[in-house]
Length: 196
Image (cartoon, rainbow, N blue to C red; front, side, top):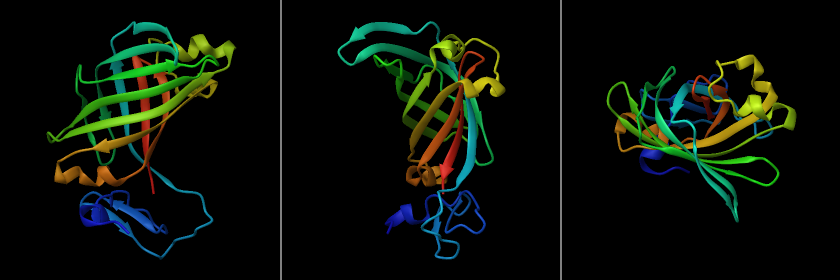
């Protein structure tokens, strides 16, 4: 059972036939037995697409005991969706990527978003990025034109967590989100979904 604002905090996604619905206008998560099926997979609802611009090239810390460390500083960007839109705050974050010996990028991303109505959102996510050797150059080319059709050539997923003190967006504090991401146009492009 959720307590306090968390009970009403994620009602933004107006799901039909689903026991969990999000409705940012009412400021919360609605839990309802109608539509609940314990055996069905979780449903996703689109929150926004973030187009993040990075300072390139990244800082290369080099091989460490944990893997090769790269630091991609956030230059800025935009985000837009049915419930959220605004800008990626310039120079207020980075992705501290650790490349494991098997070639998988372990993502540790932190940056700030500012909504169109001046709310600040802190986002922290962890994820994975990998491809086959034949697609590594394509996958890691952040400056190529955006190519959604080619994103099948690599795996780029993350799980963002949001924090904000703004009551209009408090529902974000209480959701689980996932991304389906790709590279291009100067940085990552994240399609962010709430898990209902």
